[in-house]
Image 1 (spheres, rainbow, N blue to C red):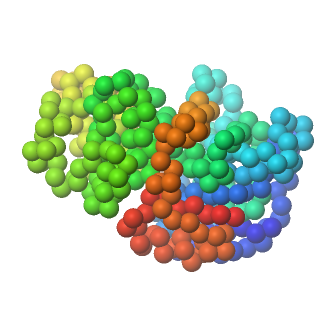
Image 2 (cartoon, rainbow, N blue to C red):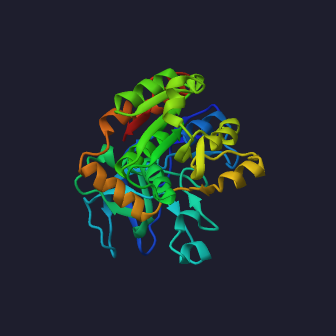
Image 3 (cartoon, one colour):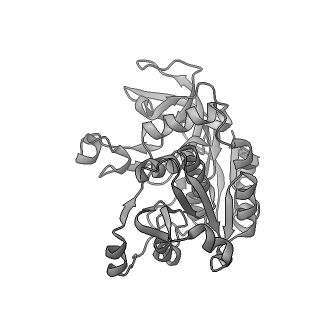
Length: 332
């Protein structure tokens, strides 16, 4: 069967591989759609800190069950794929937090992923995509990351929320903060991202305008919650200071490096600082129900499409031509 391999940074190849072998309790799925994640761009560019090549990328996936023998799934069932493989035995897993399992493995990152025609996965990693198009189903994973961050932050109705970073993950955070009842402002350094965010009904501000009167009026003494989805050490170290005294600061983006904050400021504000990693079944279910209810503008989030055969040429082009790009979807 066909697959797309990244043998080394800067290269993508369409290759033939053996069909994966099924295991008891695992399900064979034909891949339908694949969302291209920022992680995939980093893998292609060679900037991902924890990766071995060659690698078949792809972890934002939807598909149709080909063989669900011995499980609750039947051939033809449309599914959303949870790409996080956990041990089920460590303290985090036993506490209901498999998203931060001690030995967590993400397909497409730590092992080969879904840029291929078929995969086999544990039945527990598949969720019925009832009421969703398979294109929408492929957007569920990245949106679940934002939904998880909002749930972790325990955003309440009426809270003033600042989302720093208007990329796909930041937009997911903003969408689910709004669904939770928050009054949401988004800040980004790129004008096209600010425009796209405004088109979705959010107040959005250019990072260059943070010293202006308009943002100062919204900021006032600080936001009830600030969620950083930039993956920039410089921004992550500074966005904390937009949080009000007694407020909440959540790190959604992740990058290799050290965060440094003045201890006196953290204590003076008595901040609650959280990290947010991946998502759980609860978050996937919340995303899928929100899409069904028409609360998620998936048509605006999907900005680019390509066929499977186009990936080796189109994905490298998107690495260098990001203007207007939110989410690119591959149709297998």
